[in-house]
Amino acid sequence: MPPILIIRSAFPRQKLREYVLGDRGFVKAVVDCEKKIMAVGGALHADCEQKLLEEGSSQENLWGINMYPQEDAENWIEFDSMINIRPQQGNRTRGVESPTMQKQILKVVSLLLQ
View 1 (cartoon, helix red, strand yellow):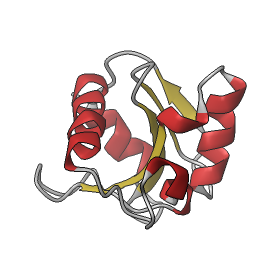
View 2 (cartoon, one colour):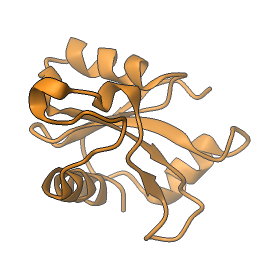
View 3 (cartoon, one colour):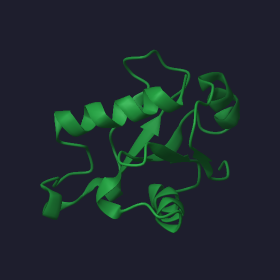
View 4 (cartoon, one colour):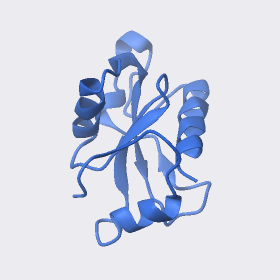
């Protein structure tokens, strides 16, 4: 498992590939849609979530994803995490059900990973 890395500004996607190389081919990440930062790495999405909470993020702005940096642009993000189960926010599954929220997450990811 790669250690948790907080990404706050542009980070080359190639570096992300190198970061997960030799691991399982994907990396867990949690995106803060409000602060436009993300935590990448760790064994569980909850690890990344905890790191961002310690950095001052608010729970309602954090969404878990899996990233497969070797995949093409259409298939490299997977909206799947236990931390996404939030009935109080209208999200009842591990996926991110709102297309609007998915777009916000993708916008932050594309802003940070180039």
